Image (cartoon, rainbow, N blue to C red; front, side, top):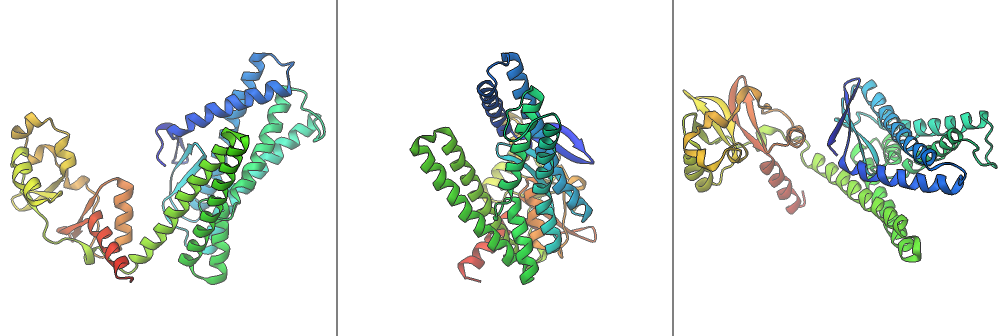
Length: 376
């Protein structure tokens, strides 16, 4: 879930918006304007729209605070946090490493709902001090906004405690099972399956409500269920990948016969004589026998075809010093994580300054497929 709009950073954590956030932001503002106009017909249209916009902005601010609480606990346990992204269904903190123990997993999971609950009850408490009671209507725009923020944040806390991945409650459930069994992968599988069950409940409920006349609200619940189902399945698959690559190093899977190109070979020749004839997609570029860079179809296709005969490998290659590299003893799971995080397909394998080979996404995935085929 990468951000398409950057908002800045807090303590080195990038804050951004996914494009899908724009959709839900508009829907929330429209929904709030309708709610405020019905609850307070005496308000002017300007007041209604102003309160709708500010309520939505404060709500999204509360979501960022919710995600920052996850990030704070993760950072306190030396788990790097890359970014926080708001999207259609809320927010997500990109924590780059798995929790090292059950206690850490539990607290990372539960701190978010606690934070949302504190925000919610604080908003209701301030409203109460301003004269609102649960049995009365909010009299002023400020009070109405605070009451809505109070209830919606408490609802967010409850919703996030659904016991299944990828919800915070799933992390809490995983932490509890992990503490009881001492088995991290097993606890993740159980939390993932629980998440899939809850997702199916949401989908069925949403479709039932839609065909019962609930309209968009029912479809929205079904969409939430669909998202939860995909995320829970992805979590389960991640566990299987991690377990499948357990005790497997880069050196076990890398290709040692790395295709080599001279730095002066032109792109037309590379395409005709190497890419199309061999099927290889990654080549090391050398000068006097020493690797100086790497070239793939991605670099070549960025150059206009009419210029291929006049551009050399050295002109478009990625310099060796700018490449992410791994060692033969690097765990294969870690290499796959780097490949996914950097959006690349292969990594040079270097030992003592010498190129040993190439580890690719394809070789790792083929290894996993073979294990699955053999039921290993």
